[in-house]
Length: 506
Image 1 (cartoon, one colour):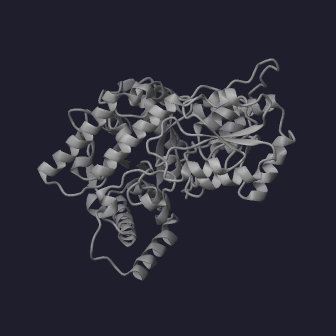
Image 2 (cartoon, rainbow, N blue to C red):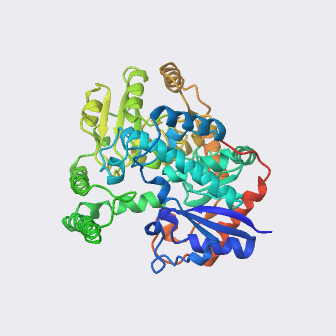
């Protein structure tokens, strides 16, 4: 008897969708259903080798995400939200916040363009959308007898899909990329691989300490990040600016000529033009900014905090309880030892300018310094006493070198390590800094041994990728080799088989 899996349409995996569905059906007896936003939300059949026939059914959720004028009173909506949250075990507000259109007002660290969809939708209408979408997805999963859900909680549809699946006892899997560029199938919203605690314990027992004369090094960033940074110089050229402005203008004119109504994800034209131009100018300025590193006195104790991109799933989806970067900077600046400095560094791949007053507030602290976005975070790390992150690959890079890492994220995977700290208050933050300043840490060799074991445990459940677009996390419109598809699907099936009887996670 065939089992049924729902796959959410995820743009970065457009090349993989049909090939994965065919493999699941032909070799593993899984019928696949695709959940998507409207007919325009499907991948191009010509460009991405997408085939509707690969799927038993297509579920279009666009009717459920469009705002309605005739909604219930606020009190009634609140009651329906409470009932769904109580029964299914996840917060609809987190799903709204995870969406860069409906959650626009909750993003405080970026000034990015609004969409027509977001502007036209009030908060009560957002609640109504969340309720209707939850009920529609639950009904669809029941009607199709779905066993497994594959998706990503990076927008309101994906977040609710994962929440409903887990709340109704179904197995969920989320595709993710490890620091080494392997793809693995996470089972939780915080992207923990299945069985990682047990695998880490086993791997740690078999991992030897590094030789005492082995100098600490910071592992290189993932290829997807490195390739982007290598191409940043192109982002500052006049031709790139002209091309982006032309592309946005052409798209807007095309919508107008076709008289298409506002659809999900359509940004306001003038705000987009303004944002493109401002980001381009900021990147040019970054290349002209002298690095801070050479100016830092030798021996100066400092803590490094690399800012996270906003709006981005790292904050909006994966870190719903600790996404205030200015608040974190304030806490660190007031909690670290007197005489230390906090170095704040903008993410080199920032996609939106920071809001008015953001950098002015940071520069006002007398013990805070600002680094250039383009100087090496790895070089600064090797001189830092500690790294502060919310959820960041750089945190795992630092931990691998034995550098203490501080994060307010309650379920950051690096927290399995003895030198990764998870303070949840000012008092705990101060205590953490006292431990770091007083060298109350395991020996460096032991810290590095633990980090190597964790990274190896994360990789053990993943698939080494060869396709360049998959490594970079983008859809390139080229067929993925069948051997790679086979490996990715086999890893998914193996993970499902290993915990088929496990309880649902919230």
